[in-house]
Image (cartoon, rainbow, N blue to C red; front, side, top):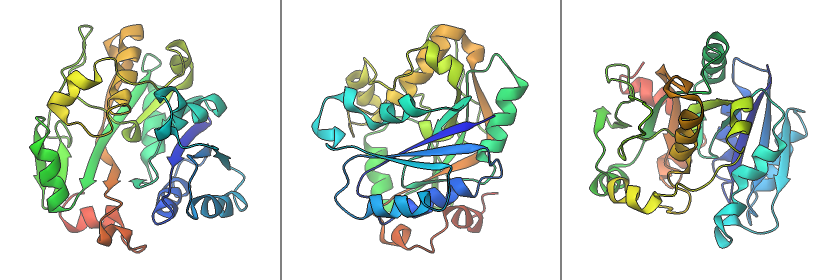
Length: 269
């Protein structure tokens, strides 16, 4: 089954290659990578196009205006959604990395349970101490640590997965698009759109105020799927299969920096 991978990017020439490599390194190879450039002014487009020239699974779409200067409806995620051809849909940020088995594990879970509309895994956050303290100071969710690696509960198998029910979610719950894979058919039935959460500002009092218009859109997508198909529509798949990298950190800008190896070096299997 074809998986459509959407990658939004803007002025990330410094790290976008790492993200693309993590998609190309997937052990599940039946995918298309749709890169939506949000009017970059650096070398991002030429870098991505160089990959597309050598791999027919990669397509590049460029926007004439940056979405941050427009209304939320201009979100480049929706540009990608309109072009998806796969039975499954997922997304990877241009500064994040997947474990090589991310797609394989997710597709297997979806194929084994036809009632599942979306599955999600754990994410490891590679943050500098300064950045981490900034996050924690404005975020009331539970944090856990392995060495210098940070996880937002319920990450890691020793934590209880999110309890999803028909009444909704706690404001301290959060599932990120980078760690989820969706069934395209189910996505179509909830509008096939990535839109801001109607209670974004209220939620931000618990989770912080960064990127207000787009923060929480990920969780709102999950809530819409659960409201449409029931609690069984969203399932947790154990395992740290996604790595969030701080693209402004000098160490992470090193092209030889490998977040998966970094995690292993700090004791995370």
